Structures are given as structure tokens and as C-alpha cells.
Length: 202
Image (cartoon, rainbow, N blue to C red; front, side, top):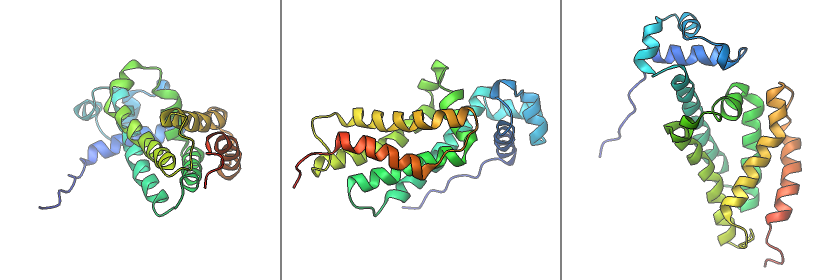
């Protein structure tokens, strides 16, 4: 069987996505116009509508590309790490570090897309779920090997972990303050692990 290679994206599409990414570095999404995106990209405004349904679809596609990249990196980052809690610690640090180092991605995911119902029916949301499924898999493996309590639903534990990460990072993202991945990871792990660790395990 031949390995299927992804077709390279059209140069114009790449320029448009990069232009929006650049603009989001210093402007709110609502304040950015398609004309401004086109000018920044050095393309015609009509070309935007060739590749994207509208400005929000472009935003979703940008987020989708981020998520695909970060999911692959996360899977690689926890590979070879033994123990559910060690893997969860690495996962939590990685997640916080992404928010700390890529504020455009963080703002899109946590602020820009969630107020629109169409987002929850989009391909982009499916990628969010794929990302969170990596977390769920680690938790379920921890339950199976006796590290994590079996009387708590794994999905509830996942919600607790991801929700806690968002809450400790949100003010830093909104007000563009420093986020310290090492410090926050240590604090969250102490708080979360004590609640989900199986007691008296052999």
C-alpha cells in the first residue's frame, strides 16, 4: 500500500491564514475585517471567499490547524513516560505551556469561538474532542492499572483537569499577563492528584 501524502495547501490560502494569525496578535477578532486580512496577506478579498465560507470559518480553520499540530505534539510528548500520574503531569504542563507561549491560539480557543453554536457542530470542535480524548485515554489507563480511583467517571476527571487548566490560565490570557507553566503545574497536580489517586494501592 502506498503512503498517501497530504496535498500541499495553495499558497494563497496559506497567506490568508498567516495574515489572520498575525492580525490576531494585536487586534480583537471582531475588529478585523476581511479587507484587512486580504491586504495583510497580499491577496484579493475574493480569494478569501474561495477558500473559506466567511471570516469565522477562516478562524475555525486556523484553530483546527493549531489543534492538529498540538495534538500530534502532545502524543509525542507523553510517549515513553511510565505511570498515569507522570503522564498527566506532563500533559498538564504541556497544555499550560501552550497557553503561555501561544496567546493567539489560547484566545481563539477560550474566548473567540465558544459563544457561537455553530462551533459545536464544526469539524474544528471534532478536533478539540480528539485532543481531549488523549487526556481521557491516560485517565482510563490509570484506572485500569489501579493508579486512579475507579469510583469516579473518567470523563468527569477529564473535565476537572481541563477545566482547572483553563481557569488558572484565563485571567493571564485575557489581560496578557505572564503564565508560569512550572508553578501552575505543580499547584494543579497537588490539588487534582490527591482527589483522584486510588488509596492503599499495592
